Image (cartoon, rainbow, N blue to C red; front, side, top):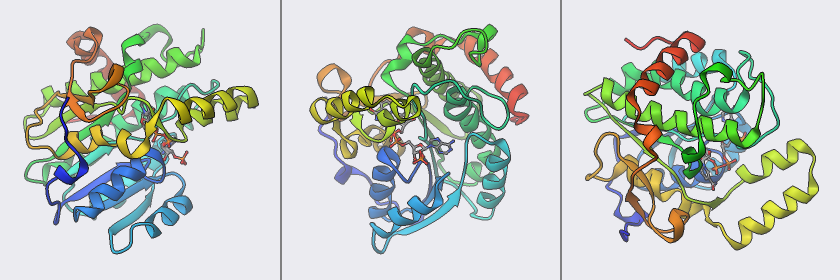
Length: 298
Ligand SMILES: NC(=O)c1ccc[n+]([C@@H]2O[C@H](COP(=O)([O-])OP(=O)(O)OC[C@H]3O[C@@H](n4cnc5c(N)ncnc54)[C@H](OP(=O)(O)O)[C@@H]3O)[C@@H](O)[C@H]2O)c1
């Protein structure tokens, strides 16, 4: 395990970093860390009011808040149009996500976990490609989860219409994150695309499923587990920060915490599941994602 900390991040003055889900949890911690190193951070959030509150917490930082709802492709396109005015984007952190929620659909009729976690970020990255290419050494970091190892891309039932399992859908979306991250890296020499995972970190992520199910028991269990087992969000953000800024990162790396069961600790490069490196599945997922989102990469 390395002993890398956020203090080891390089100076980021003059760099522009876009973070999705920047108002909460890992995205907020990463935003703070990027900003403290001098980056201009674009906080891409569906809830702009809470993002604005978060902005107040980092005095003197160069932050802008822009609305982005990954569950609505019109919102993704509107965000990309606004971002085009920013000039170059040095780092895009595809971080936002939802976990193990009851079945619902996005504005475009996608199952929400697959739609937000994977398809929304797929569309966003494609629409920001020109701005990324304007940067001298652009990076795309996509936040996955250790749970991706349980995932399978079920092309016959991508949206869980036949049979929905909330954890299966989450694992599928997190495997899709890695298939996408590695395929993006294979397709574009001019950028570095990396996957990461935070281990287990105490954030709002674990609340959303029980809240939407209306289960006070599960909510209480998640709260206790977060207090006892999880590492703080600040530590959970380290793999994303390392993936986004460390000099020894290479394309298609996968970064996660190197401590107990890879759930906590300092970041290191790791191997993800065998399925995540399957190039046939990655290519098929890419075509299906272009078809579904209408965003075609050149
Ligand atoms: N925490 C962990 O232990 C853990 C483990 C493995 C992987 N992860 C991954 O880490 C990432 C960040 O999660 P977190 O733990 O920081 O949870 P979090 O505190 O709940 O943050 C998730 C962020 O995603 C945003 N989001 C959700 N739906 C969105 C949408 N439709 N459009 C735009 N933004 C949306 C949330 O916005 P709102 O505040 O408006 O809901 C929030 O800002 C996720 O991809 C998650 O899968 C986390």
